[in-house]
Image (cartoon, rainbow, N blue to C red; front, side):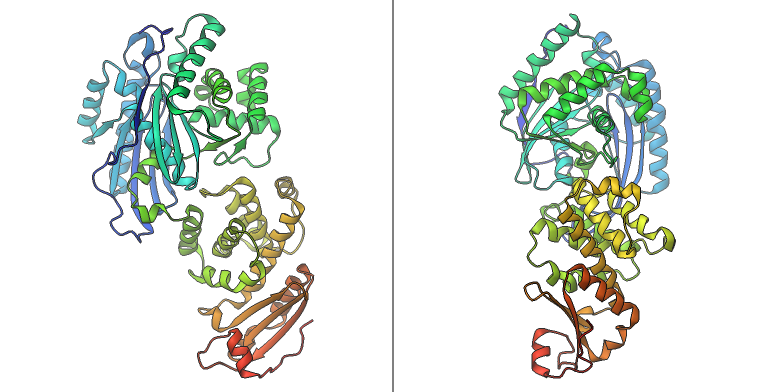
Length: 544
């Protein structure tokens, strides 16, 4: 193959049927998964991921990667790298044995560009299948693009724009919107191929530009958002964080602008690879591909002109998981699903988070839907770190929100959630390391996170199986009043510490705290109707 002649790109529309025959989730209401594994045999890396837990939001029970380099030298020889074959064979044997030991319910092995194009690809596939007894599915470029785009939809159900997945030997594009994958296209813009392009910097620039313009003609250019999938893109994003001294080192949903990307690519050109690797901890194998990937990204941003650029840690493996979800499961919120699962597995009273949210909702009734979603997530997570040492519980809460694998959560959302959960256990100020991240929020958002934390701290004092029958909050912003209505039966919950926390919440809201204790209604619930119907206020003096 002549490296200076762009090979034909491949395009197709999303098929109505997927790659796999049987869905894992026969019950649309299923929330939990038994262990489900994917072995991803790529041109550069071979990885085993085992998903477990919340069905809609991937939880990683096991995740191991080896940079085998199957596609190194492919353009020159037309064959898989001999060294890469041996490393990949040993790695896949290990993964097969691990999967056997885990007794997982489903294991899928997929292979991409190097395997589908190498002369000895079929031979190697047969060897692997003989070694392991597992079937290796070698997928075409359009299917690879579709599955990677579905991975993005796993984390961003409402994502609209262009997905770009770069591997060692190919680069795929797909358009997404309305929860679906639309056009898909594949190209030979992987770094292993680009290593063989002749003509120096100009030859490489012209080669990349020619292929990208062809891709733009096929898939269109009016995409405001660009979602980047693949290890080389993640390495560049990590370098962008380093250049900007970004305080939150979480790559998933990291957001960049075209201007920021250009500055970082210039910065990469100006610094030695060794210095960059040392500063960020990126592996030698991955770092060696960054300069070529940078050349692709520079022109990709210029030719397609996105306004915002996001990094997705979800790709083909998560796309395979998404492939097996029925529509009812796909439509769920990945953040809420993940938080619900964490509550179910780690909280002392699973299910109380939903009652706590209903109890606190009057404080935040006027907030937009996205903020109420974060408040709901905080209620679900408010008790999952109870096992941590009391001295470090607030920090553990903050780290759960900011570092956990949570899809559907922006970086500013992570920090808001983390600070709210921190204040659930801590009444003082912010620790220095948290102050750096708090700078990502406005003063108003910081105050609201503090309000939410104090609300959680008070609400936890009323932990009961049926909170709605125990207490009700009423908030009157115009009158600056915060009222707590308690049933007579449960009034004993409101003791000294609860009173202190209620006052603290009222002070945060700049409101006057008031408490009423009511006779039990005929339905046994505390409600506006019960309050007005009884007309009895016992112990109803103001707590303020």
